Amino acid sequence: MLNKYKEDHMNQIIEELNMFKFASLKEEELVSDYINEQKTKYFSLDESKKVYLRNKTIVVLGAAGSIASELIAQLLDEEFKMLLLIDKDENALYALQREMKQKHSSICSKIQFILADIRRKDYLSKLFEQYKPQVVFHYANYKSLVMGNASPDEFIDVNIRGTYVVLNLCYHSPGLERFIYISSDKAELPTNIYGKTKRICEFMVQTFAFQNKNIQSGIMRYCNVLDAAGSFAIPTFRKQIMNNEAVTIRRSKEGLIPDRYFITKKMAAQLAILVGCICEAGNIFSLNPEWIRSIRIDDLVKMIMKKSNLVKDVESWLQSNVIFSPMENGEKLSEDLGRGTSIKQAPLIQISTINIDQLDKDYWHKRLENLLQLFSLEDFSISDIHAALDILINEMERRVIEA
Image 1 (tube, rainbow, N blue to C red):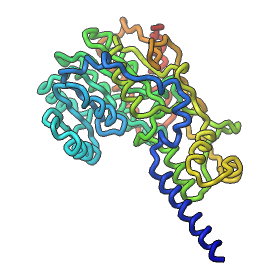
Image 2 (image 1 turned 90 degrees about the vertical axis):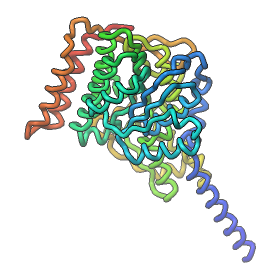
Image 3 (image 1 turned 30 degrees about the vertical axis):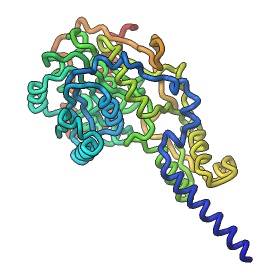
Image 4 (image 1 turned 180 degrees about the vertical axis):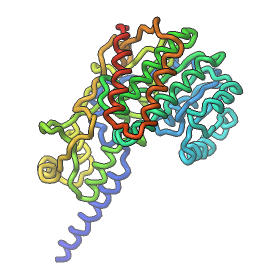
C-alpha cells in the first residue's frame, strides 16, 4: 500500500514537472520538429546584406509589436546613427523602453521612443523633418482576420489611410534611401478585410516607388510568425491541453482541415533586413515554397501534444479530445505564397511589380476618399466594403506585370 502511494505521488510529481515544462516552452520549441524539417533553418543573413543600415537614422513604425521588437534586437548589433521607435500602444512602447534601458543602456542615447499614431500627418512630418531618417521599416498595421471582419472601417483607416500618410511623408522626405513595408501572405488573392487592405497597401507602395525611383522600396510578405503577439492558435491549443479540455480545430463545410506556413520571429526579422538590401522599385517578396512547406493544423496539434509528454498514445487521445468548429468568414484552407522568381541563396521569391505610368499623382487620394465616404453612410454593410475594396484591387491587378 505504501509503495502504491509512493508510486502515485511520484507520477503526480512527474506530471506536474511535465506540465511546468510544457507551459514554459516557446511556440517554436513546441513545433521544433516542423521548423527543423524546413530548408529555411539553413538560412543565415550574410553580414554584407546589413551594410545599408550602418551609420543611418532608422525608423521602425509599429516598433512595440512582437515581430518588430525582434527586428530591433537585430538592428542593435549594427552601427546605426539613430533609431526612432514609433508606436501608438503606450504600454507596449513603455515596456520596450524599459527593456532597452535594462539590457542596452550603453546605446540608449541613440534610441528615441516616440508615442504616435501613423495617421497623425503633421506630427510625423515634424519628426521626419527633425531626424531626417534614411531607412523606414513599416510594421504599423492591424493584423487580425476576425477583428478586421468586425471593424472594417478601423482596418481601412489604419492600414490603408495610415500607410498612405506614411508613404506621402516618406517619399517627400529628403535623404530617405529605403522603405520596407511588411505585408502578409493573406494579400495574395485576398478573401478577407485584412488581406484586402494589405493588398491595396502593396499597390500604394509600388505606386509611390515608381514615382520616386531614388528611394529603394520593397514589400515583405510574412506568413504566420511563431511567438508573435497576434499568434492565437498554438497558445489556445496549449491552454486546452493543459486544462484537459477538448482541442478546438477549425474545418471547412466539406470537412477539410486548413494548413498554414510558419516561421520564427528571428527569421521574420532577417527577411525584413534582407528585403531592405535587395529591393528596388516596390518589389514584392514572399517565402519560396521550395524552402518551406505548410502543415495541417491537426498535425500541428499532434506535434504540440507530443511535446507535452502528458499522454502516451497521442493518436488515441486526439480521436476523443478534438472538437471541430466552422472556419471564420474569409479564412482560407491554404495560404498562397504566390509565384515568382527565386532569389539566389535566400528563402524568397520576387513576385511582381506594377505598371503605373498612367496613374495621376492624386489617384490614391481620390480612391481613399471614396472608401472613407462609405462609413458616413448610415446603412453601409460589410458586403459594401468588400465590394469597394474588390473594385479597387481588380482595377490595380489589371496593371500588374511580371517581375
